[in-house]
Length: 282
Image (cartoon, rainbow, N blue to C red; front, side, top):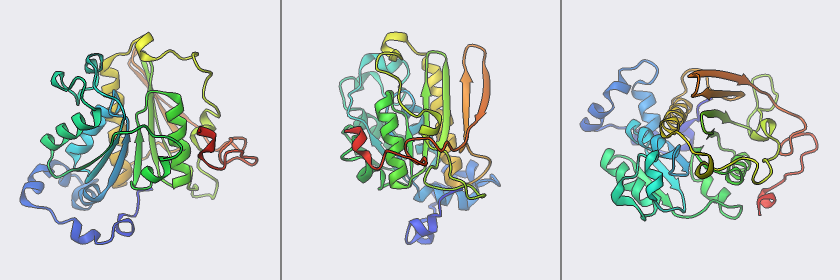
């Protein structure tokens, strides 16, 4: 279910007036029946937080900016390194050693000056997650570690924000949308991230990309699909990924979808849930 932007944004109608330049820029969206002027207006007033300006965040940021998302928040405390440039296409060689949020903001401004960029040059943690996430309508998590992934998913539940989350391995990727704070049409709870994966794996059991390697183009595919799912969530067309996980096998070039549902034993919203706040992440 797409957010009610008229309710979320006072002055919605006045804010959605388009200049002649914007009408030309977004013409290919506006002629689409599934997007049109109303859908483009929703994009214009939408506020999206991207966690991580890395392999997944880089292509997603570029496509969300190109699509005309009005406000893009970027949270990342890292700087650009030369090894990032194999896949993090929003950054360039002259950006090495610059904060990633600054590099990304500069590229977005060059691509689409109509997009407002808010940078958070910090690491998301239990102390700041709710405050930062609550400033946005939807969150896209492109983090490269399990600790941040679980923190973001738990924080989105407590902040009542939808989450598009993805992960990549050496030759595989996954993508799903979480709306754990909402119910299905039949009144049952939507699943949480912890319904899929109740607890993170033990440290050291899953190698980081620096150890195992990763295909740069794979992060581009998954990051672009994250942007597509965020846009779909905002505009409200098609069938989303709530309760479904898209799985990508880059070796065989296969796509599959796994259905999953609410688990009453999950530790966040389950019958005997033990997670009441973000203190578990401290």
